[in-house]
Image (cartoon, rainbow, N blue to C red):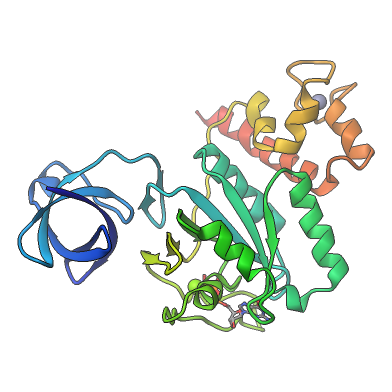
Length: 291
Ligand SMILES: Nc1nc2c(ncn2[C@@H]2O[C@H](COP(=O)(O)OP(=O)(O)OP(=O)(O)O)[C@@H](O)[C@H]2O)c(=O)[nH]1
Ligand SMILES: [Mg+2]
Ligand SMILES: [Zn+2]
């Protein structure tokens, strides 16, 4: 048997990449019986029938799994927001960063549509997230800004795009890989949001090496069940100061002698990031009550 990666499902068949070739596969009935689901990104063992057909006999254990849409075994998350049209929702961005960290997945932030924002706005926003400890790439499909860096990030990795509708995820992919012609959609001027153009998930192959999944963004982002004292560990820039707080259980909210709040005051931590931390803290505490 040969090992491959499930890259798409279509018309009842499963397309598995083994080496450089694609095999049209069916799935053993036992998986349905065992209620074992197969999802894009799964590593599978295929019994080869002829030069392009096979049967999936085994689904190998996943290193990770994201839901809605389901995808397995990714190596990094590309969180994409437009700098304008639609305006970035930083609460959603921070929620996505939190999700990635909770799954132990490296995150890279793409700020697209740099052509629509003033230079100062771009550098202010980039600064906030670089200071927070994330790789940030301002880019534009229109002018080509940053696209080489985007390629470099994607090269030889299995990546997944996320971010709100209309941010330009599919457009970025079309720009860095010839022949994809993924559908893109105008941002509605009336509601200021995208139209959910991308509707299904598949892993796309990049000529320069690597696989990447375009997605409609991950729809339900629940707060992971973290204890309140550990929420600060999801904010890399806060972790640096938290150990200097007077109380080791400090939540960096109303406690005295809080090194995190002091760092916010001194401009070392972005106040917006701290505010959003406090919003998440409230959610975490509410969740504790529920369980
Ligand atoms: N001005 C400008 N427009 C862009 C840029 N990138 C994408 N767009 C436009 O933004 C709109 C949305 O782009 P899509 O690529 O469909 O966005 P998406 O993130 O894939 O959206 P969904 O598939 O709905 O999740 C399209 O009209 C694109 O032409 C950019 O860098 N600058
Ligand atoms: Mg899309
Ligand atoms: Zn503190």
